[in-house]
Image 1 (cartoon, rainbow, N blue to C red):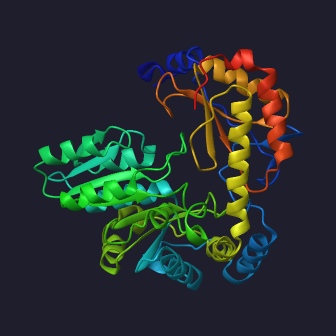
Image 2 (image 1 turned 180 degrees about the vertical axis):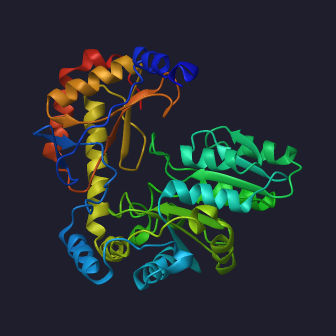
Length: 394
């Protein structure tokens, strides 16, 4: 079989192109410091934006819930896997996001595949931002609907494509915060274009929920977008909320439809109830502890100012995602290794995750970082400005 599929040759070519990926074994909890191969690293690669993944109250809630519910749920939600913990969390997520109902999914990837496939068929059309996350793109392709990608954050290009479409149903899909650049989609203009063209707007707020908006309610709340303007909200629980899983929120009718028709919901085991209980505690902390978001804002400003002082064009992102684009995959790998040699953990992001020629260091900030931590990173970047080269941009 290896000869038929040429797996060995594919792997060799992948290595030659500096695109080979390797897993690293983390030997302890997530945090601003992680242990790998017995060495401690200052971590600038985690999506644990609010520092909740190892919070003692979340751990306590999960341990207590394991004693009550056990470890596994044993079945899908529609069989006998839907617990009181799941149901309570769904209600709390709906209240928090200002929507009628919410529905838990095991992962954000499964949520996006399930929602798009449930809403669309071959006579429909889906329009996606060119820089959308892979799960959104895959959901659009697998739905069987006519699939179009509009230019990044370009409402005029989207309008032109919608004008030309003869589809029965039209779904516009966008990330709220783009995971590799940290920029925020133009949600108000997108919602107006959708309204004018009788299209639904689906927003993936995986990297905005918990971080943006009042009480961390996310990008839609920040942009003043309600349930009618964006009928579909998806967000994950494994980033700013520090746990695991995802949810979709919308109208009563929409959520009930997903329960009946979303295959990735119907045909998979429910997440452990203990995770749901831990997330309920996380949700309470996210709403009450505004200092975490305020601290992130301070650190973002501090980091960008430091980059500019070094002569490195700082990203314009107002989110914890702060990419330093180097362009070349070999260069970004070398720079990532230099940082690692200096005790700094920053992953090199290369194609196909990002477009060819835009390989980058994806720096992510956490509310538990300090100015001292950022100074360590800035000092190391300053020591290696020649490797960064004049091509660095944000």
